[in-house]
Length: 143
Length: 432
Image 1: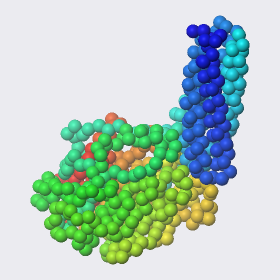
Image 2: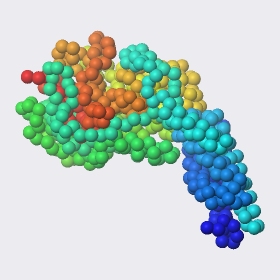
Image 3: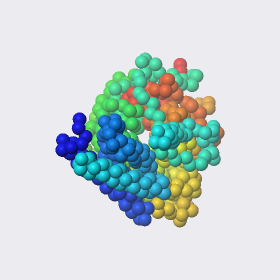
């Protein structure tokens, strides 16, 4: 399968679109975590739980795709970029999973300081993943 | 680098997941002063559901000098029972609750817990069993009342049968010997029914018959659906039997699943299920006298004034007046049945006290409950430790049955046990 040139463009564009989802969803989770910690209104933590679960679905899909890319691009100039992307997505997924468990606890324990910290870290990592993946797509598109 | 990071993450995840499902030490968690360990919240609560298996002709274990038989099988989720003045036995069958799934957790927990339950659909009915010759085999079995809505608590006073549906307390006029009631019941009092996370409405009548008591469980584990849905939840109501007027006599009593009158003192007692996800040995379920005006802590505190930090905003004003229950039964045993021995009970060491049906745990690795216990009473108060009365519901870590309601019948000197897993009513009687 060609990973450069016009034939690869739909794949690259799709990946770039998908990379926006974890970033937006983890970010939404972080905002609603803050809202919960400020108001103790329980609906905010319910929102967070679903937003993080949604983020995990997309992170999981991207992680699987990035593992395939890593293998296919091992002998290309994009190896480092593919490696970084897969690694960042893997860590994002693990932190998101732990944060999902945190958010499955009851009441204040569903967020607390650990939940907020994990939401912030996952948001930053998802943004990094989006940056790395999109940069790679732009480079590949230029070739 | 990446590999090490991944390996470390996976390891810490495994540790977090496996952490502390078993009790760290052997704590004494029964009686008036249970030992309470520190709270131990884990990312995944310790969970073990005993998967169902059949009895295969075997029977539960009873103490020497007693025999147990299956009095009725193939019921539709039997919960609580009542013996009418003529000796006929009524069995309430059904499953209630309509709690919406608010979080991904609710979806997942529902699937896991369903693994420990019967696949039979709740009957929404009351079955009548008539064993006039007292040999343990009913000569007659009829559907006594149909089209109920998750009936649970039953009481009989002065020619009227009272049935606690999950949304209303109903009254049915009864003629002695009747084997079927086709007329719809009259609503005496509507009961809180929104969400119905804990849907069972337990019921008993006061000693003089003038009042009915209804136990109404909380709408969450510990307030995680918000406190607005907890209005008139985790309470016991006293209802005037003639007018239907009601008064809240106890609050903060998380899930009072069975109510009964202690015969020597005429005092109302309850078995109550406490909160989950604080570790395998928190919080003990309990047996308590229901004191008028008492606040039992839920959700803000447990066993008196032990604050539960999961509940925000905190309410130190309420915690300050929380009282500790009378008698702990053990953590996560899920006490659902309560019946006092009356008129001398079975005699001997089972003359004065309470039988307690324990449905069994999910929130600890070492299965707990899954039996009928006996708590001896003296001068209207529990004494000593609970002792096993009927066991054998577990075999090789699998559940053959799960006890719910227990009913002592002083006329025949038998104990009835409703088992909502094998859909059986068991009958325990002295041998010979």
